[in-house]
Image (cartoon, rainbow, N blue to C red):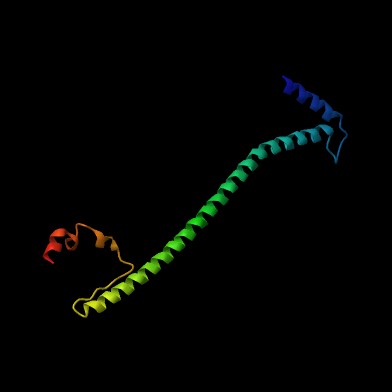
Length: 128
């Protein structure tokens, strides 16, 4: 009931206001109330916006961090491939034409360590 009496009190106060720019005091008061309601409706939206904006900034920082790590990993992969190419050249010189090993840095090298591969099994190693 307190809110209703306050609104009634405000309305009577607005009626007593002088006219302003062709509007009655009551019209000015009503517009003022509407403006206050709009501000109260917008305030939580602004808080939510600021929260989402900070979340976006955090995600941008995380994305930049991930890209930096990916760049470092890529550089390490390039360096490792260069070392492996040098090792393959050295091995080919030792083999002196009996066999030639080729290395493709972009190939899937997981197959080289696969134990199901006949070349890596203990049985074939005994025959060698």
